Length: 400
Ligand SMILES: Cc1cc2nc3c(=O)[nH]c(=O)nc-3n(C[C@H](O)[C@H](O)[C@H](O)COP(=O)(O)OP(=O)(O)OC[C@H]3O[C@@H](n4cnc5c(N)ncnc54)[C@H](O)[C@@H]3O)c2cc1C
Image (cartoon, rainbow, N blue to C red; front, side):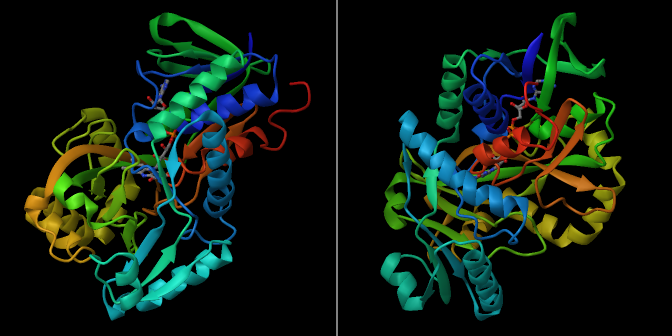
């Protein structure tokens, strides 16, 4: 019998198993991942941004975990030799109509303790001569990192501390009996632990159902497609360049992100998709499709967001439409500046009323704890979320 099992080898599961093994040397920890490789889904297919915390409502779990998590993750990267860079970010108002929302973001950021510098048109040009916009915010502390490399470092540190990692092993059912948790896995085997934490990302609602817990939400997948600036155009920006986000939508809009190893990615867009783990807009998984289309909240959301979804599909279909949108940040950007790069799929919890759950969400039942919603900035926040999971009141009582 083990002290702790963590299900899910994405960045949050790995951070949680690593923190537990570091805090409680001598206790047994096992991490179970269904794919052959760690970080196979969201944690290995994202923008690689170390978010500052400017976007999130003060007092929210996202705001607190992002601020604390960024600091913890940067410290971890320094200790573990994982490189990260801090090029800073510009958030650009592309027309006068976006100025009130830019001012709200400035206040929100400052409320969260983020250093924010206001820029007029000339100020933008001084920092980024190729970028257009009527006004902007400069956030010097925004950074970039390779989250796959971070996951690799967590797994090494976990194993050094005596923790075990089992890949290629799917958890099918979870149940509690006499205060212990039993996990039924691929091939008919089982594992027993005193405590289990489930960080299942795109499968988090199903893993709750496999534990006889009603998650109350459905995971709706959103495909995020990227393009990359061809090498001859990649020197046009040196910082992260973002639009002012649309408050009706949980995603941040197509942006430019310098990658840690060089190059500049543009994206991601946000297309509702019918496959949780399919990385093309043509992927359809019948079970995922039924789960999404059978959820009443999906149709309520669709009725409200139809114009937005249509715009996203159009932008996805033609490189010209993608480039046109990009040219509002980077004037002159054309389709022939861009090349395709791999996509990601976001796990977003949606409730029955059709509201996207904005904040991180957990559900505990006895010795079992599920992380149900961990959208961006969960990669930035992973170590802080890990601390919160381990400190869930009454979950790890002394000596447990
Ligand atoms: C396109 C995109 C861009 C993003 N950009 C950023 C960014 O720039 N900065 C940022 O902070 N965040 C970003 N995010 C968000 C961030 O990547 C995620 O919030 C984070 O990776 C979630 O980590 P996770 O461990 O919860 O989930 P995941 O990485 O999805 O891991 C869950 C794991 O659980 C495993 N699993 C599922 N079911 C089972 C089972 N039955 N048995 C065993 N294992 C199972 C899966 O195989 C998977 O490996 C982005 C996300 C996407 C998709």
